[in-house]
Length: 359
Image (cartoon, rainbow, N blue to C red; front, side, top):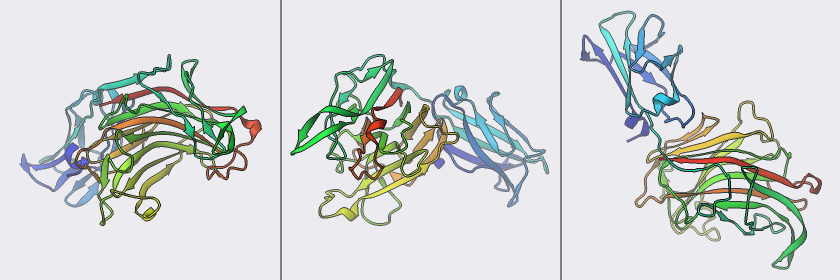
């Protein structure tokens, strides 16, 4: 079973009887995200040939749904009604041929919202400890909120923390909802901005299993043709401006059960895609989201579909996901793969306007 098969039905008729000679097809399916219209590319086939929709009578059973030459646009309010939407099509060449296209509309119910009026410790944990580079130690703070924004800072500190004999003069930040909020399936959405510093700063919005990392899974890959690969990390957004990235990466990471990075590094796999945000400008807010269900995961940027992975299947005892915001710093001399930042460019801050989770 695929997500397309669960959510799309395509039927053709001749004089009211089922017939495959005339049909309207969706090129692909995705559920859309709250706050945005959802659009689908379509095409029409008549007796084995694609034909123009010009002259065909096409209409939806919702009056505010509208059509372009090859696109169906469903407003957010209509999508939020849920249920099935039907498109009726009458053939221009022979009115005895008709077709129906049925699309299941994705209704969302909000389960968590934080507009960061305060730093709510009923939801958030402050992360502390060694960061990605030994020069950087993550200091936990009591309050990460400034001016109604969650602010995760990249800093150089006057007084170092000594860890394993290394003086750590640099600090980055992170928060998570581990053990306080987690959810299996749904839409995870945020509005945030990353610093415009050209290099040395790595920002992320991601999910991990409320269980054992690398051992408890959200889903498994179905496209490898070999041993079991289970996903235990979903990176909804990662941005680092090095050497010239201007956009975001959407990635899932997979492991075989019992994976050991010391003895079996080859068994780790990942599926990622870089996405250049149309009109992206450094230092501006963007919206990032993913919709995860049993058979697919969809990534969105500013309401537009950026990536789909429909080569997945549920595992037994699917684990819910908790949420993380993290920022990583690459000081001069650190050799960070995302580049190095100059001291004079610090401090910087990754800012989150809001978080919304839906089921």
